[in-house]
Length: 175
Image (tube, rainbow, N blue to C red; front, side, top):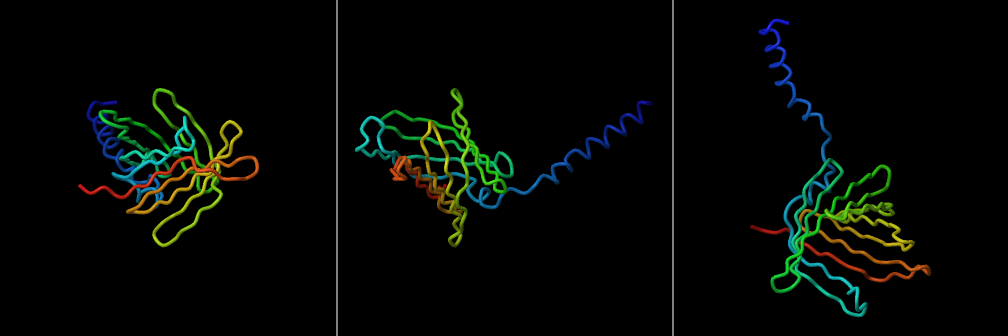
């Protein structure tokens, strides 16, 4: 192929590449609405003393990984001079009724949950997801809105009794 024809073909291909991105699907509107910076807290039942409840100031950064996937970076203030980072990816399959969590960087864990409820109250979408870890059922409740973001985890025993495990409460951070 003559050099001039090859350059023309290469130029045409390079010019067309960005057009492919135009055809990627739009993100899920609820997931896109939670993208950004959040501030709030994590409250959890202490692992060493189940009667003790601990609350930590927490920041959260959320970005889209794909149209139905959010990537979350948590920053916990765990006392004087102790800042803890945590990372999680949540992949939603709304049509299939499931969610896949991938947590951690050094020690990655993956778990799958089933969406048992998906409702709206005003501008807030409420998702209830159940998962099973080590034979125990966990109920995760997400309240997603443009200015408020809440997550709660309850553990369900064999008798169906619910016990609080942890709760995140965030509001949109202002700069």
